[in-house]
Image (cartoon, rainbow, N blue to C red; front, side, top):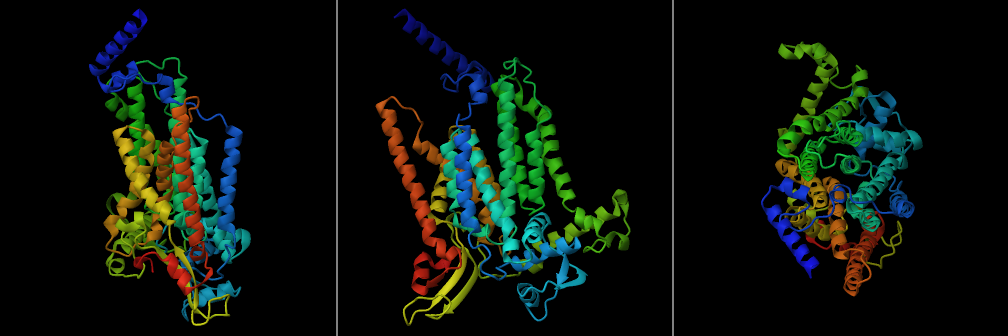
Length: 558
């Protein structure tokens, strides 16, 4: 009885102590805001990773292989330029052949496309071309063309490869965040069967590369958080007041390179980099508070903020600039002679001519994306970003209508024609479940201060919200392919909560786990079935018109 009394008195003393000090001191005392005991500080800084290294990698590679089989299956068909492939595939080949983008023949209309499909690659003029996106994504497409030729398989090879690799990265990142191989594999499987990510992995557009580099950058930041906190947990002066920090953090340097390559694919990556820059500062601040450092905010701002800026932002800028090496080295590139024709004035005199021309090039590209020309443009598949999370208006990339019965593989009964389409449509159950999961993630991040849920929220928000400022120009649902990895991340973490902890030995825990497993398993199976159902309209399959309409669940999808 005396022992029980002593424990109660100790808990009461701990509660009073926790309530009488600031948040940082509470962390040091091992109490939360309500005075409850927290796990040991070392465990809070660096929870142990799963002990299934071999089986974890086997499962990761198996799901990645599944995603790759889906994406590479018949990827060379249809044998035509699909949607904006007509720009990016040819620009990529121009970079490969000349080192910079050239204009291609355009009279009669479609002449260059027809010639290339017929095997004639002599379609480029001598004049340079203004391309309105940076060059990284096009160089990546060009790598496939170098390996397999200027054909549909060649220009779609790298999108399929990097779409598959995104699945691998997501599995390992979510596994690290959740400390669960199962949850990581659920995330990878869900991304593998998302219709939008699948379609974007099978066409030579830039957005799948942007999604890959963003996920890669975030993966590096999550690894950096673990790497740093593990070193702190292993430090002999863990509880010291100084809370010394590591200035050289290789994972952050890697993140800076990945963000630079993302920017070199599409400029919209800048918002994601800014959002995660603030988040990693919050992580550093939280670690200092956990160590009991007083005035942690100001110390973190002074000591952590500047190195983080150098490691992430400055490295990204240097990497981005390096991606323009081809343009800088070729005097015939578009606008490369701007500086020689326009002498510098003022402070611009200290800028080398090549870089001054490059700055002007960027001004022209920005004018294209924000000028009156693009604002006055219209497109039948334009989609407001407010509807993206619920797939209000997907986009059709290719369609062949009115295929007669008995021709082109059409097996429809007499009186009914067939069609074949490629619709960039997200798997509906996955997206709708993901939208709910994002709301739950916001509550869990803010309400329970669970840092893991902040990652998908920041990733989703920074890939989505900026487009609201550009809704006066045509924008499209396929831009949302950068959002879906973060949506899947939130969904898998929420499913982990539903699944419950893997604690055995008590009947209540066992029952809780069984119910959670049934709910999670049923949801994943339904998503896979939903993907299989929409497969024909993702892959240009010939369908009777009524079968196509059965998959168009809303008028806005047609």
